[in-house]
Image 1 (tube, rainbow, N blue to C red):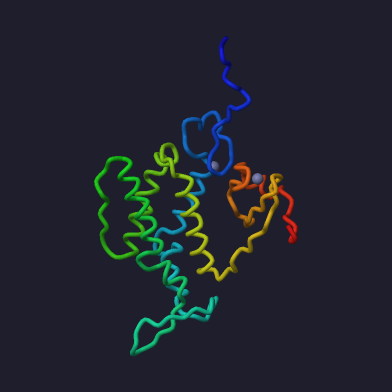
Image 2 (cartoon, protein in one colour):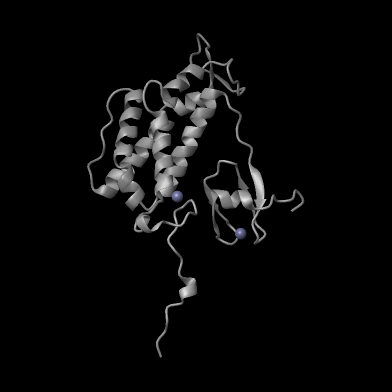
Length: 214
Ligand SMILES: [Zn+2]
Ligand SMILES: [Zn+2]
């Protein structure tokens, strides 16, 4: 007796966003729209008129006002807004991008990347290097989805600071399995923690709102 492969169990490969890969995307890790979304996010950061550089323009309170104030010096207290400051500083945007770049270099078997110049130059260099290897990463990097989610979220944060836009409010939707998923309208996709179903963005927004009592 031959055991037939259980056809019903076959799952067409999907991207982390929940979209099934198209025929010409097979063998890739991510779908092209996700690669494009990551590329667009990276481009928004780049250069002196990019979002990263513009964080400096909202450092002092008065524009948006998130209420958090720190002072840089004990003698001449200059109130600064904490959120743009932490995105601009080492440990913020530049460090996140550089950490991914190091990870990619390791996977490619390349030498550790070198950082030159100030933070703006390091940002620009990291963005260029990531964009240059984006096609490779979207095709091969097992964590491309995590990369794109992190970069897109980071760019949204910068954007919110620069434009003074309010934070998106999460909404709760109900998965048929009974689990409640918290998403925002710009959520690119989500996996249900209850039944492991992967939802694309449009599918999430089709789910019923979770009732408050549930
Ligand atoms: Zn995708
Ligand atoms: Zn579920």
